Amino acid sequence: QERLVESGGGLVQTGNSLRLSCSASESPFSAYTVGWFRQVPGSEREFVAAVKRNGGSPIYADSVKGRFTMRRDKVENTVTLQMSNLKPDDTAVYYCAASTKYWITSATTSPANYEFWGQGTQVTVSS
Image 1 (cartoon, helix red, strand yellow):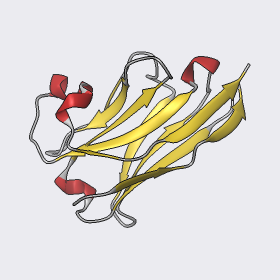
Image 2 (cartoon, rainbow, N blue to C red):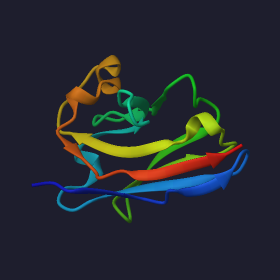
Image 3 (tube, one colour):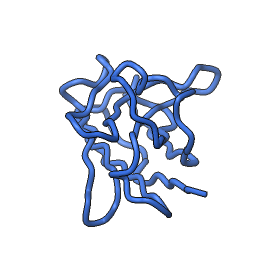
Image 4 (cartoon, rainbow, N blue to C red):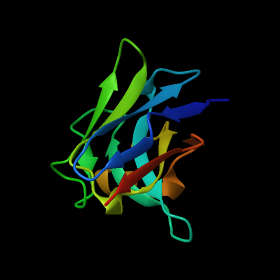
């Protein structure tokens, strides 16, 4: 079974940056549609960014466009989320997710469509 592990979270001040990374234990990320989601206690898991299995540019939630960048690292078999100009509203547990499905763009924004999930990494942005 595939296992995903996120890393890179931490505590930063407003305006600073963090880089999250997700690793996969079995298959290369090229075999997956990959998404980043975040969740605040008591709230639903929220879409952040995703890239489809069959290529194309990543898509982003409106709240992070221009600040977050998602990339595949083929050499290390990781997927990263570079987060810049962080805001207190970005505070959440961030999760990496993957699916073997070929999806239309809109389907990548739903947590229910992903088969594999990491344990999450905490991002806290102080005001």
